[in-house]
Image (cartoon, one colour):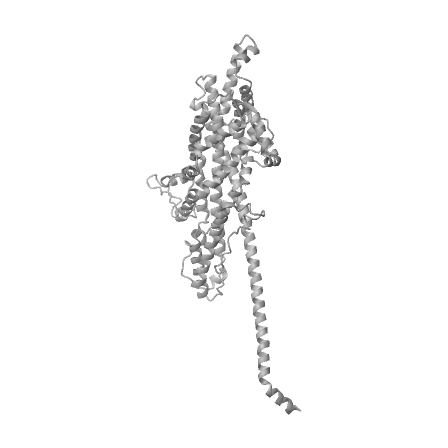
Length: 556
């Protein structure tokens, strides 16, 4: 019996061998597929976590940009509003009116027959009510020192100054607010991106305990990740200091250009002239054309860089102007002896570090790009529309503020605007008040509490309107997800993997996760409305990253 069974197995040994091989192959294939599936699931989970972390970082960065602008707006207010003391002109007009009333014998009726129409006095009263809460010490000092209001001016001259300065002040603040918002977005997103890349690349370095187990003669003190990618505190502080140029120099250059345009457009107009909201919008648009350019080509050729950043020969002066001094941890600070008092002849000059130079150069490239001009135009359209169509229309023309129904059926709204006329002087009080609302910063909550309540608790309603512009967020996302210094990061990863392999460590490496995709930032609200013209820019950024990764895999 056993012999027959042994002979049967011997005769079918080939079948049993093939069967065992087949079962083993199926088992190994199943284990391989199961491992690959688990690996894919783990990779997808890590990528999802990385994207969510990157989105959270990006959104937090945009909130920081808004708070930074609010913190800088009081400086803009002191510079611009102090240069145009409209409230003092209003006070002088009221003073002259009181003197005429005192000299008059025929009573108020005779004075009313020789004075301006009812429009201008109401404008003076409205703007005069602002003196108690909005006239700053800087305004009083500049006006008294310059002596602009000391020489006796006629009523016509005062009205001309009030007309030009009130409109110029509001328009200058709108341009400064838009430019400051864009500059802050560029700066903080560049720093946020570099900090994120530095933290990701640092994950590729061996743990401190494993590094200590081997002896290395290489000095990593001067080429650590913070210094390589510019995320050190000293570089960031110096880089952010360059916003001083716009706050103190650029806004003055903008005000000069706006003043010239306003004089050309509004100069010949009589304050007693009747204007409609449509006519006023056309006049403001004409001012914008003289500043930005009439055609699309002229707007693209407009140079905004001189208003935002200083020329290279004045960069060190800007760093010294706000009192920026080298910290003890910086290379310049380590070379100085704190016990020595350097003389002016031996005082070391401020040096623009290579990391700071890379940041300034990329900032200049972004400002000179056509995308910057496009986004700036969108911001200006939003702020000017809020000023004219919302504030001037409701406060001067007594029209209801635009609602969703009016936006759907604009015919009724256009007819209402055309039929309503007011004196130009009545709109000046609105421009005067709105200048303080535009420049309201984080420390002016009490002064604009009424406006903040209307706008849902926002400190600055104009900045809140700017934050709703989708192209601004898309522009920030492109900056945050661009491939700046991607090749240097790839080279640093390769060097770290070689170092790990030489030390006998498991060289897993840390690949950079895919940057923000369209569905992470632009598509988070659903639909295709958030993509717009930046879809091609996103595709280009993602394609460049994929090309770098494929090149790395081929070399491996």
